Image (cartoon, rainbow, N blue to C red; front, side):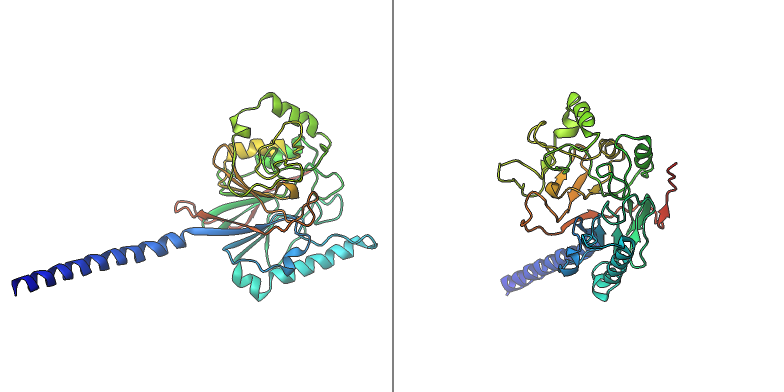
Length: 324
């Protein structure tokens, strides 16, 4: 009888301990889940997002070149772009997209507006970040469309210019998430076989000061290699002479100073992938288009960040920027 009581008490204690452990796990799990903010990112889609089943996330980031390509037979490009903006806005405002993405963020690319455009188009069903900041569940998010690669495109500023330097100087410190259509030099920015205007000198200057802060990176996703075996998506040039990066050197220096937790870029389909830089910033290039491998299947990229408790909420705020 004594043994039976002892066994019963032991079983009772074990059950109580088990229940307390389960209760602790249940209490802790929702808190961790609530603090994790997810971002689904895509760029260079050229309208492909309309036929893609996108995975739900707290925020959808469109990092530029998301309108369909302008047909060669179009005469009135202004009207064509207006129709494309309405199409994108309607899609972003659809019930499915609203349910899946409470926050919808657009940073325009060089092919998302007529040549020479300096003023970004607005949308009703998404937040357009153009040298502007917003809050996403406690995270500070900043976006800019300026790019030095394509003089024939929209939102162009000359490489290495004071204007471009001023753009990156306006990035708030601190910023958790930085969205730029142009990639930073040397990070997921493979651009083809030739260097664009002004980049040769910038790249030569970079080679003179090769250090761990530029090339000590590692990939967080499978590397893509072309038919010649060249590594294209890790952000680390396989050769200083063969990689042909074309990102913005001034942006690279700004990222080094601001140290955002997440940098989302576009414009370089060959640079598709995810990497981490010298200060722990995760760089995501979700460009779906790829000139070097047109048939290559690519998907939008997803990343999650833990929301800080100490950052106050901010509204979408435009930072004034004037081009003289």
